[in-house]
Length: 91
Image 1 (cartoon, rainbow, N blue to C red):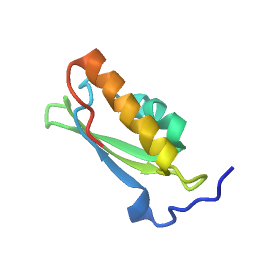
Image 2 (cartoon, helix red, strand yellow):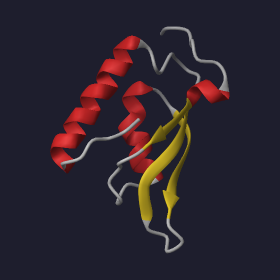
Image 3 (tube, rainbow, N blue to C red):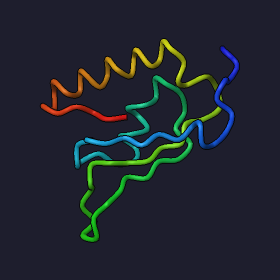
Image 4 (cartoon, rainbow, N blue to C red):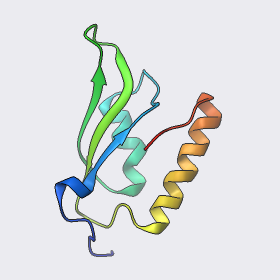
């Protein structure tokens, strides 16, 4: 396992947009599992409780979650989701 190159909390934060409004925190954690552990995730919601289709995530320190190979995987995942959902995933 590669040592972690992303140490600070700020460096490990992600904001993800254009999620399906049916996604929960568990769905997001599963989506990002190939890139490392998701320590924290909050799906942003309207006052009605309906998802806004956006979330903030904190990736774990266990490995370099955003190295070049994983960025390629993330881009591929975004493209696959875009084809399935007819809109792009923004990270």
